Length: 181
Image (cartoon, rainbow, N blue to C red; front, side):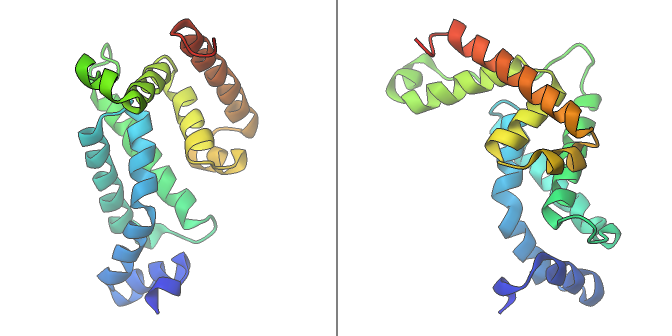
C-alpha cells in the first residue's frame, strides 16, 4: 500500500509519524536520479557522486519539516542536490577544477560505450558549472526549463542561455574529437 502513496503522503508520514520506512520509499524512488545528476556534474566520479548523493538525502531527511509542498518533492530534492554540489565546489581549492575520470586505454578499446561516456564527461568538463548543471538537468534528467529555474534559482531566460551556450560548447568539443564526421 505504501508504494502507491504520493510523495506528499510519504513526507507527512516521516514528519508527523516519524516513519523512517516512508523516507526509505522516497530514497528508493529518487536515488538513481540524484546519483545520475551527481555523476554528470562530477564528470563520472562514482565515489564522489555517491558521497554527494548520500549528503543530499541526509540533508533532505534532516530538513524535511521545511518542505512546504509548494513545489514537487523532486524539485525540492534537486534544489538540495544542487546546493550540496556547489557547497562541495566551494570547499575545493579555488584553482582546482573537476578532474575527468580517465579510462585505461585497454578498457576504452574493449568498451566503446565507456569511451563515449568519457568523451561526454570530458565535454561536460569544458562547461562552466552553471552550464553543466542546466545541461545535466535538461538533457540527462529531462526536466523542464521552469523546473530547472526553480531548482537553480536562475531566471528561465538564463537557463535557456546556459543551455544554448553549453550545447554549443559540447558540440564543438565533440566535433573536434572525432564525433559528427
